Length: 327
Ligand SMILES: [Zn+2]
Image (spheres, rainbow, N blue to C red):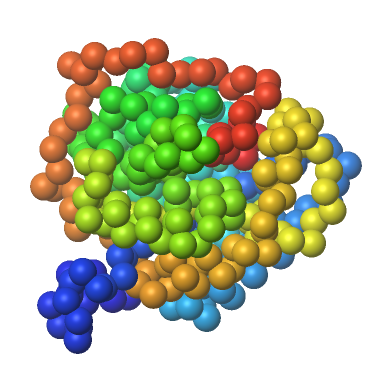
């Protein structure tokens, strides 16, 4: 990869012209539930993503559901064999507020061990389902550190109709346990007259927003706008974001609008990767956390006043939601 700093110092142009380094992350999950009468498409889609990565010189981080790894062990081995980081995205995508610390510890350990058995490599990264690490579930980072995780990328530091934590730092920080947090990159934008903090590098946003808008937001954020930093900029996608052949069906708990968004502009996704990530692929998040972790300030939720920020899984998520509860 081309390090952003090096590109500025050693490249032919000044730093301001260097494309921001963007790490590539995949939440390896399915928007179908076990037992639904639909075919399984994510294995083929994931192989296509691996081909896009290989062709673009991208080495990413794949946050994998333990349940999927159990179903497709060969796929997880392929991901690791191609040099990507394999990290955990929970066992079965249960949002943190819907579990208990004990159950979380048990399921997380089970997922970590399975991925380590499959890859032969320590699993040190964790991403909570639906960015559900919020003020009310701040017990999770302590348990993650106890289980041997080095970093998490589980916080959406903005208001969100599902899960968000506006009081959390916008840039990378350390939890009191020493666990590094790499929050979802967000940036303020006015869309349709409304002020929003957008996770603008997330799958649905990059599919829906024009490329020029996302590129402008990325350039602003890489200059440190809204309290963020140029460090730890990452994009997140899901296998279905690339699935432009999937026949449309209405996902039961998303409703018609949410389901349409789930399908919208999927044919754009590969181009978005080549335009936003491939010009300067960031490192897998494990390496980013290693590089910047020690110098990060500590954020202690116990000493930070919080407003009510959690909206526990509404039955009809508004269209601006970053992910559905099933994703
Ligand atoms: Zn997810």
